[in-house]
Image (cartoon, rainbow, N blue to C red; front, side):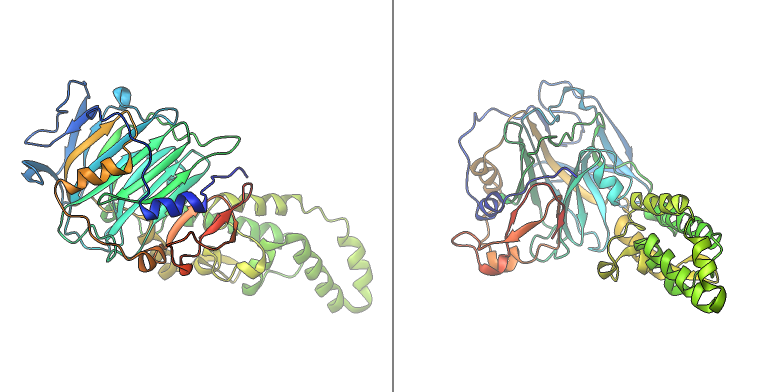
Length: 426
């Protein structure tokens, strides 16, 4: 598996608010002030269309665009043809938002990708997205086969749902494959994408404020991937039961999935022991059994996030063990666990106000981002020890070794020196 490299040094520098070189202070390529219109305020032609529950309300400066609340999607969709969002282009995106939505609601704020939900499959879709989750902001970027996701569940530290105006900024420097994410003027995290394959997030998807998808209210109770996982597991159970051994018992589903060959040998020996004098003949007859179909079905389970598996020691907290059970030869879905996963993955219709959406064809340096925030609010002091240890979802494709954090960063921050070539989730 190819990897995404997030170095401890760049992450630490982002947290400490280090600044980069000065940039040409050219104005935004596109600027949406939302003063009674969704049109671009610069000379650049950007075609757009609105849909759903959209209005204009008092904003940070002048008016702002309000999306929702409603039972359906609400969005402003912008044609990306004239906007610089390829992985080979420098760009910056910045906007202000305000909401008092329930912190448990999860919804998309701004996206440049197909994002029907917050599943692993959607996170891998090429492009990037900002969303609200757990009362704070989340972000993901995908290349089609891989993903980077930044998500927290502690909205008290970087709140979005407190009714105040908050600024979110993303910059991308193509020469370094460097993404920086800012909240209220502060550079909170920096990603470097650098391996032999690169990380091409380029997509033809439009830039969307809000969301065009179907909300939770209109969705089935069981996620399609969970039902597909149950069907695949049932096919596996039936294929194994057709081998002429004792039928699978409820506690044998995971052992079969984790190591089908070893499990098969154990079941053969169990049956041989029960046959007594006929045991040796039974062993000989089963020695040439073709397990190709079973192994192929087990391999296919790796494509589904709910049936993906690894060694038994790590299966206790796996989605497979939590969601599925084997009862009288039938794979059943535990409805309560399935509902928990559905809540985590599904998006609600948007419910927020946006102002001053700006897009540059250059990289905003950190000091310029902070200056733009300081035009409206005084920056607040940050408790690094409390905030650095509160990151709950920071997903990158590599493992690493523990190391001491840089000077000025508390030891409890737990930085990683990341090694290319493998996969890691913190």
